[in-house]
Length: 392
Image 1 (cartoon, rainbow, N blue to C red):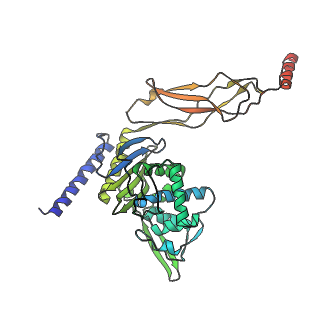
Image 2: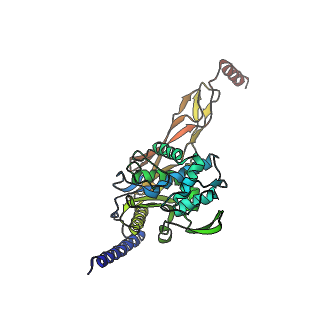
Image 3: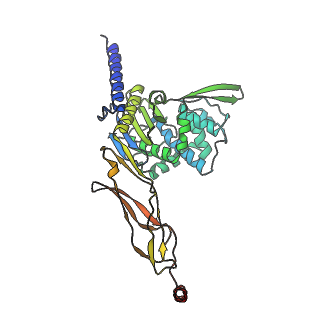
């Protein structure tokens, strides 16, 4: 048998085996850790950031177009801050229109709504649209890339440095890791879940309007998991000859959001298959405990204050990700707060903690704060309090 035919047959067999394994995992029959052939990978749960699986996750690699996750994140930040609006008219520069690689063929001087350009970036991975947005937000791609690197530091992406906003650069200075990609993916989908209304678009038309007239361009998603995996919600693909095939895939099932990052895949099909395998593995072994903290908290006595007591407040819902198939109904919740506090008391300052334990092992804790300010009582306050009690 010729070598080419043999490789194609083996690849086909591999796909069938993987499909069978995914089916068994989904049915709860198989939970074995997936075998990853791509250069690096990681799987995390989005709300906790907990790592479920990793393989060479801190290996420095070229990110290709998954660079655009940071561009998209900064775009949503600018929208939230009111610096830009989806309805903004964006004029395409000569620099933006000159981008190669994946593009939507924007022309110099063409004007498009920001939302249209955002769809071009998210759906079709358009380099020209990425640069146009970057220039609209920061004035130049160079200044925007500076913001990208600042944000990477803020998120703790210690092995990341960007040289452009779209991922065309293949120099050693433009690099990241699967773990860092998961960090910025998590920031994007947890802070701006509205991104899913764009990442789930399969195909959509937009109109080029230039001096040459109007023409329709059809955006087609680069994320083939939208048609291959039931619980997919996004996020971004990438490819260059140096980076090879990459994807950051987000899924949502039974209220749990997972992020699977695959970098350095040998071919397009493998990156999607391995991302789906990671997501299915996560859904087979993970269960999420969420305490919405509706239980009433006690009030704390205040010594020497204008008020005798101060209420307490929760700061956030407690979340715990279990991967050991534990019986989470046995979680014990212990409120640790003082019986008395001395005035003055500042609203929002830490009062204590709610500690969560299972089988005697501490799972974590959440902070409890004082719900009101309580000023220190003056001599006059004390005098009138005594007088009031005496008169009564």
